[in-house]
Image 1 (tube, rainbow, N blue to C red):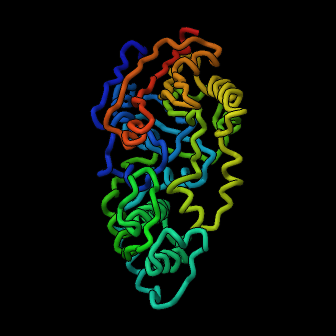
Image 2 (spheres, rainbow, N blue to C red):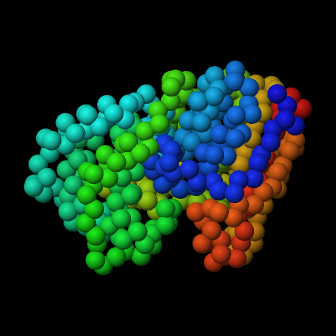
Image 3 (cartoon, rainbow, N blue to C red):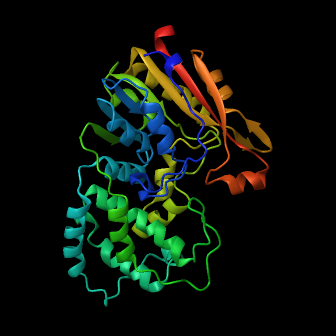
Amino acid sequence: MTTEQLSFTKLESVSNQNSIHGIYPYRGKISSLDAANVISQLPHDKTLLDPFCGSGTIVYEAAKRLRYAFGVDNNPIAIQIANGKISQFSPEASMFRLRRIIEKVNFSSICPIPPKAERYFHPDTANEIMLLKQHYDEFNDYEKAAFLGTICLVARACNHYKWSSTQIGQLSDNKRYVNFVDRFLYKIIKHGYPLRSNNAKVMLGDTRKLSELIPMKSVDIVYTSPPYFDCLDYTSYYTRIVHHVFGNDFERIKAGLIQNRATYEQDMINCLDEIDKVTTDDAIIIFVVGDKKIGGEVINGGDFFTRISKHKPIHILEREYTKTASKIWDSINKTKRREQIVVWDKSKW
């Protein structure tokens, strides 16, 4: 395999909601269509690592085509969603099991929702969430991911769908009742696309210490979309609602993520060093990054990673998207959605 053989096609649409990837509106996730396009060009007998795997889009798509796929992320909610995607499950079996659990729930009883989560839901919807949440530990990984995704879905629906699929808008004063159980079961079936093999694994861990998790020189390909260098908050928006429902200390979780502007550059230098340790001497490393507007200045992601890397990329492709979930904000900020695909070939180092 050579980097010259890789083609990074511009996609007119990056959305693929009718797939397992629509199970949760994880912020900043890479397009599964794009991931599938890149991975389809890679040799089947290779091991791939996504060191910033988020909700597991790349790992899932790689596991469908390659020998083995690893993922690492330091966000526990992201890892739970990723585990749900790559787990061995049957949507039909899940429906049967969940209906048995639901039959045992006394929905006429009251189970208060944490105060910080209360404002997002109709009271009856909130009560259904909390009553079913009492059985969360009985769910398998796919069912847990669907449960978390349904919390986000009904929060949007309770507020009359005035929010986008990625952004939370104004809270409605007149919340709409949405049947949580029905939406949960619907999501189980809608996104039920299980892998045929179990050649994937995701781990909760810090990429700045990657060599403690992954064997040295064991990875042939790194394909990832690293945390945005304007330090996007991966504990905010829909995920913040989930944290509120579960009573999680998201500030503690946030403190462990790479999203501090003061330390971001050094953090990413450390990550690049760790990636070098765990990859083979002829490994291909692919980073999907992008332009970001910070304080009125547009910073080019390709230029940024070229500057901090010890080795010059063999290839940088810039492309523009016009049909993304962020297009409304691009219009407001008077920016276009551009991204760079940065490719290193270690055989040429």
